[in-house]
Image (cartoon, rainbow, N blue to C red):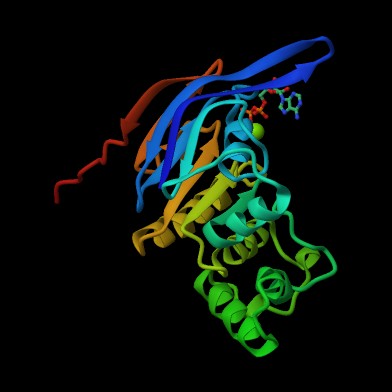
Length: 231
Ligand code: ADP
Ligand code: MG
């Protein structure tokens, strides 16, 4: 689904450059549940933004679903995002004056889906994250965990191939964060490919593979060991 070959990214800093990604090689296969771990400033969001076609790399190769990503104009990038990707952010990014169901159905509106199907699909996905009863509530009436579940429903509603989640539990307490990870695990069990970015070890351990990022390079890439309980 994703292949990165010697990927680099720098940001201009005055007359100089800040070299953030210094040669990333990474492959993510369909159906994987992967976390990218790294301390603050290690380049996690930079990497996610490139993977999500929200920013461009400046050296190396990026293949998304076998399609080589070169410099894209915004229209093409938006088209690919709509077709392949669902996003979940730390700060939920819900529209405050729209209800839960309206937030979830918005991406379908942009896809040109008719009103009736939008409503039905949005309700189906709200139900999937356990929030059918909260459909007509505004974000301000929901808890942090509920807001993130709405955001997950919104990411899923267009049936993407890959979910990119940047610190999805970062604004939540640990119990609520655990519940959000539980939902992601359920979605993964149904076959979704998910990439979670986090700086929390506990969160990374709930995925199946941990990729560690340090100073712009991958320092380790390991399967999470499952604890087997003998009964
Ligand atoms: P993380 O998500 O791991 O905390 P980021 O990818 O956000 O790290 O940032 C990595 C480094 O790049 C940081 O030093 C940050 O200040 C810098 N950075 C991030 N985005 C930009 C930008 N748009 N312009 C300049 N520097 C940036
Ligand atoms: Mg970040």
